[in-house]
Length: 211
Image 1 (cartoon, rainbow, N blue to C red):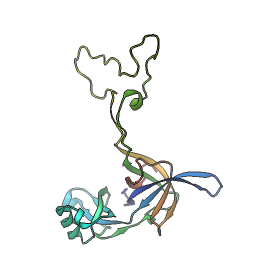
Image 2 (image 1 turned 90 degrees about the horizontal axis):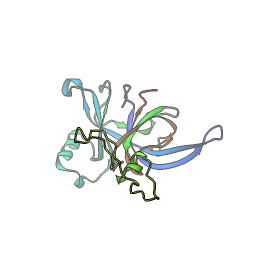
Image 3 (image 1 turned 45 degrees about the vertical axis):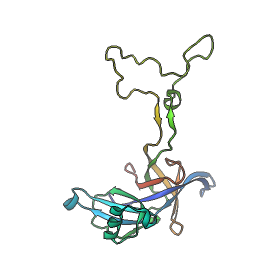
Image 4 (image 1 turned 30 degrees about the horizontal axis):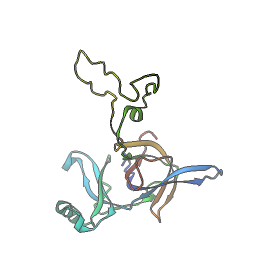
């Protein structure tokens, strides 16, 4: 959530396109936004900071570990599949058990969306960093390797070196996405542009910090 407390959890459903009022095609990402429930409220007096913990998604109680069952039971809410904490300036206006729905945002709002990017496994330098490959003919023995590390004096690899490794599966935030449509009855928010992650990934939406 942002300073005004506008934020919600959702699930990415996929991409499509809609027509704007001027007849232009707008590429949008469809997000199932909520409904979420306030599971816990954290304040400066009790926890040292202001935040609201939101729960989203249905899950069977037998699939929830016992500590989490007690957490939901104390809050008086049904078990949720996902729990995420969103920072706010003042958690006072929120109450445990309060529902947060898709109408928290309106068409035209600018929001920041955080999700987990699609995991792509182990990748070499050409795919991961866009390196150029070496020549493929005339006896060349260098094609897609990382090349020299130039660390003879240090005898180690410096941190931050762009080398082959795990690609994707990271926390990514896209800022300044505009809300195109909101359907509170179906709990849908249509956002212009792409959102990190594959279909079904959990995303957190907040009012844009740069709006």
